[in-house]
Image 1 (tube, rainbow, N blue to C red):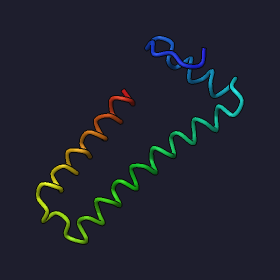
Image 2 (cartoon, rainbow, N blue to C red; image 1 turned 90 degrees about the vertical axis):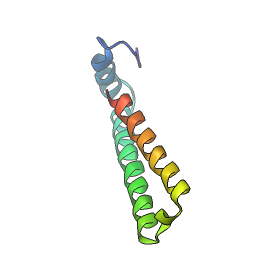
Image 3 (tube, one colour; image 1 turned 180 degrees about the horizontal axis):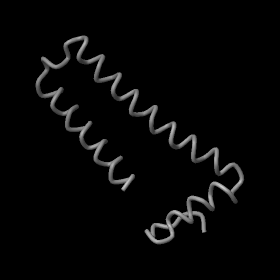
Image 4 (cartoon, helix red, strand yellow; image 1 turned 180 degrees about the vertical axis):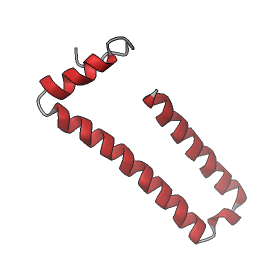
Length: 80
C-alpha cells in the first residue's frame, strides 16, 4: 500500500511511505520543497513581467493571469 486515493487511509499511506519505504522521507521533502520552489519561480516570473512592463500587452498578460489562477486552483485541489 504505497498510494491510496481513499480519504480514510490517505494519512496512513503517507506515514507508511515516510517510515517504511526506502528514502520515503526524502521523497516527501523533495516533493514539498520542489512545489515551493515552483511557486517562488512563478512569482519571480510575474515580478519580472511587472518590472519590464509586460502588462501593457493586455491579451498576453490576461492569459498569464488565467494560467496563474489555474495553477493555484490545481495546487489547492491537490492539497485538499
